[in-house]
Structure formats: structure tokens, C-alpha cells
Length: 269
Image (cartoon, rainbow, N blue to C red; front, top):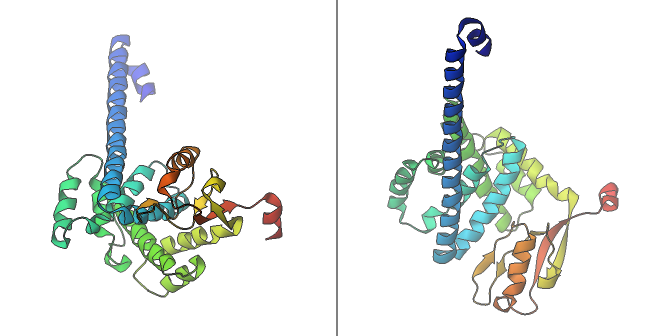
């Protein structure tokens, strides 16, 4: 394009064209930033709603997001993490509103810029893989379909894990259900499950929590409220917050956590 302008345009035309192009680029960047901020705001709002109205649902959504992160990385869908985190939170909407109102709520959310695909993913996540169109020329629709299939697999996988089934066994139980799950998603899910080979499980007290550890069970307050869900990674700020509010946690409580094995331990595996 620049080659054509340089050869066939006067300096004034070239300068004006370049100025308009830069202005358009700036508008596109602002639009993307606004969309991203909308999704981030949605995540924060949904998190607070779940924390207040149904803490158990917040724990479930955190676990689903942890699984979706692994699938998101496996499919190299860079730039869409906020969409999937919002979808994980929104997937628990059934716990907050009557069944007949879920579809209406999702239709309203579809009208919000930045949330259309998220609402569509959640709205379609219960569909079986065989019910999705095999081919689509619309890249956006394709991402929605894949996102819905990933969300379906993540939710069902989490339910099996919560029932006490080992991660690898959970994937094996999901494989024979032909047409229910996307085979590519199950393949990626198997790698997520196998990731435990690089980790070890420990039991620690509140003071033993370290950044980078991943909770293998929920952290609950003395009244049973879920403070952190299984699958949540401990960060320095989360640890400091828990220590600050240590009085909310029953004295002497211990939790299973997953931490990365040492290099020597990995070599033995």
C-alpha cells in the first residue's frame, strides 16, 4: 500500500493518507482496550455477585477457570483469556436465577460490547459436539463454538474430579461418549490432567502456603463460606490477605496443595 502511495501520490496526499491511517489505528486500539476493560469489569462484578450470593458457585467457577486456562494454553488462544475467565464465572448463572430466566439474562448480556461471545459460549456450552456445525466460514462463530465445547468439557471434568475420580480416569470416562465432547478438546484435557506428573501434593497449614502452590481443596471460613476454591493458585497478595484474616479460618486447619517438584524429583519420574 505504501509503495503505491509513494509512487502515485503527491506528498500532500501521502501525508493526509498516513494521518488518517494513524487515526484509524488509534481508534481501533481504543476500541479493543474498551472491550478488554468491559470483560475485566464483568469478571470483577460476577466474582463479587457470586461471593455474596453463592460462595459455593464462586469456588466452582474458580476451578473451571483453572481447567480452562490449561485448555486455553493448549489451543494457543492468546488474547482471549479474559473471555474464558468471564465464561467460567458466568457458567454458574444457573445457581443465581431461575432456569427460565437464564436464556433471557444471556440475551441481555449479548448486547453489551465485549460480552457477546462470552454469553454465546455459556448459552451453547450444554450442546453436544455433534450438534455444532462442522464447518464455518465465520471465524468468530468458530471461536464461540470451540469455547463452548471447552467450557462443557471443563465443567464435566470438574464434576468428576469433585466426585473423587482421579484426573486421568476422569478423561478416560469422558472419551467413550462419542459426539458429546470435541475430540481435540479431550486430547488437550488429557495433557492438562497429565500435568500432575510435574507436581507433588503436600498438606500445609495457613503459614505453610507459598506463592505458586495450587489448592487441591477449598479453603473455608469457620461458618463454611468458601474463601478460595480448589484450583486457585496462591499468589503473594492472596497469602498476605489470608494471613491478615487468619481469624476467619478455623485454627489448625490444613489443606492439600499442589507444588512444583524439584528438578531432581522430576528426573526420577
